[in-house]
View (spheres, rainbow, N blue to C red):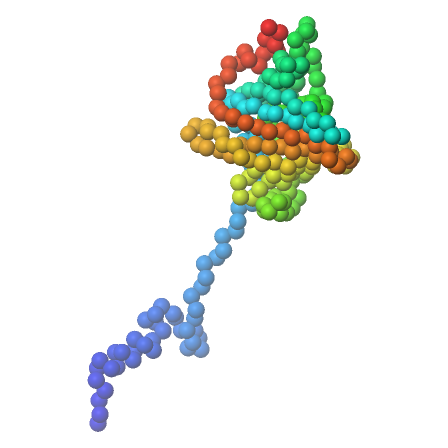
Length: 268
């Protein structure tokens, strides 16, 4: 009788046996495919964290920082421009007009949500509202640091692409009456969590102006370089062509004494 070589029998066993390649046979004798690892669900996106991240790129960093802005209005063929220096520490801010000469020395002091105005010739600071018009479409509250996470209740209402950027769309509702706007529709980029577009709303929910943002600046804080707003273009929803351009420059960390934000020190 012919006997197959032992080596040939071993080779056949290795090739044919499902146990060698790690597949247990099914009840019918067929090999079972390995089970795929369960998918890990994506972490839910938090509206509050999105606002905190986007606020940082618009001045809400906690530490002392400074920057300069040019506020330029375009309306009915006329333009006007004022240059400000802005100093911020936490929830306090001081904005002082440096140019032109007719505006030089005009100062706004933000103590949390309270706002004061002073200029040479006044005997004492005057309480004003963050909602009052500063110039053109810019409100007083637009030139200080943004703290939307503190001032608004945020809710993610969808996802949209704005000017080529994938964004989360948020609906913001004011927590208090002394904030700059009653409501805001706000688009924050998915990639970097930057405020990309805003629509500012009346109490009834009607849009009366909108804004687009750019982030060409960098701010170095604690050794880290962060994106920082370079432009805010505010457009009148009811008057096409009427808009106000806020351009930001020279953002940098700077230690500010508490006395800088004391209302009693505005008169000097």
